[in-house]
Length: 550
Image (cartoon, rainbow, N blue to C red; front, side):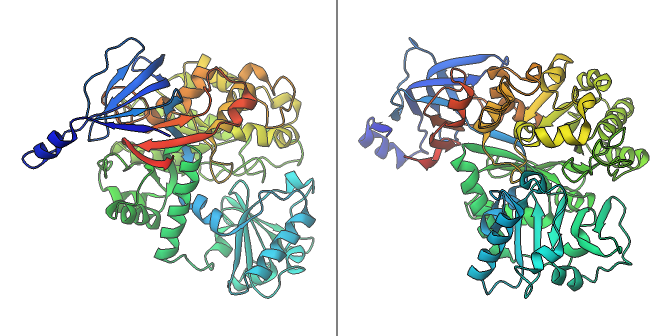
C-alpha cells in the first residue's frame, strides 16, 4: 500500500484560507518506465504532478527530490503509463457484461445449453440478447440455425451477436417479428444466410443485421448509464485509462456527457462518430474541444469499407479459399469512399476506415494517396484492422502519415480461420506489423473489445511473440512480423495517443502530460510473453487521482 507523508499540514491549512491550494504530489521509490518525448524508453524512480493532474517532473535515480505537499512511497513497484486501447466499442463492452456471454462456449451444444440456462434464469426478459458465438471456435463448419435456437428458446425472440460484431444469429420468433421472409432481398453490403428453399436460416451478415436489429427494443437511458459504468470497470480493471471509441452513436455520446457532468467519467474517450449525421449534430463544423479535463473529444468518423474474415465479409482481391467464388462484401464503391473521406477532411475531421481484406486495404490506400493531393497537413489517416494486405501494397503504408490501427489478439484468435479463408499463398501479408513499421508506417494497438478482451497485456504478449495464451504455435505464427517490447509499449501508450491527436495531453509520463499511470507487479520490457499475460494491475491513477486499487 502507498504511504502518504504530509508536510507542514498546519501551515498548508492556514494558507488555504487565503489562497487557492497549489499542492504537488511526489510518488517516489518506483521502478518507472515510459516512452519519452523523443520516442525512446525512459526509466525513472519518481514522478511529481500538480493539482491539475499534470506531470511536472520525472526524477531519475540520484536526482534531488523537491519539497512537495504530499509524498507517496511506491514501494519499489513498477510504474508504467496508463494503457490506451486504440480501438474499442465502449458501450458494447458494458452491454456485453450485462447480457448473455457466449465467448467461452466451445461447441454448438455448449452454446445452446448456455442460452437455455440464461433464458430460464431470466424469465422476465422480453428478448434474449447476447454476443460472443463463433462457429469456427466450435468446429461446426457452418453457421448455426434458427431451428437450433428454437429447440432451446421458442417463447421469446433471441438475437445473438457473433464474436466479430459482423453477424447475428436469431431464432424464428426474432425473424418473424422483424417481418423477414424468403422474399426479403439481401441489402447492399449484407447477406441473409438462407436454407435450400431460400428462407432465412437464422444468421444475418453485416448490413443485413439491421433487418432484425431494428425491432430490438432500444436500451433506456438508465440502462445505458449502467452499461457505461460496467464498461469503465472492465477497462480500469485491465489497466486501460484511455480508449478510441469506434462508431460512437448519439445515444453513446449523451451517455458519456451525463457521466462527465455528474463526475462519473473516469476513462478518457477519443470518440469517432458512427455517421455524418452524428458527427454534425455533436461536433458541428470542426472537431470538438477536449471536455472534462481531457476526458472526452469527438475528432473523427468511423467508416466501414468491408466486413470480417470470420463471416467471409472481408473484401478480397481473389476468392476465399474455402468458398468458391466468394470475395467478400464491399460496403462502398471507390467513389463513395473518397466522397466520404473528402467530406470529413474538408472540416479537419480524422477518418478511421475499417478495412480487413486485401482488396479493401488497397482501396483505402489508393483513396488516401489521391486525397492527400488535395488535403495537406497532418491528417493521420487511420486504417482500422489492416489485417490482410497484399505484400505489394505494404510499402504504401509508409506514406502520407498513415496509421495502421491493429489488434494483436485478432491474429492469435484468427490464425487457423485465416489459414482456411486465405490458403497458404496469401498469408505473407496477414497481420504484417513489423513490415508496416519497416515501410515507415505507424502502429497503434488496441483490442476491438468486446470482440477480444480489453486486455492490453495479453495484446502486448501477442504483439511480441505471435503466440496465443497456450504458447501456440511454437516459435510464433510468421514470427518475422513480431514487434519489439519497446514498440509494443509505445503502441499501447504514446502511439495510441498520437493516433487520436492526444499527444501532449496523455500517453506518456513526461512534464506537461496527464498523470495517468499504473502500478503493476512486473516490468513488461523485462518479462516473457507468458509472464506479461499474467500481469497484475495493482493500482490505476488518472489525472493524478487514484481510481482503482489499494
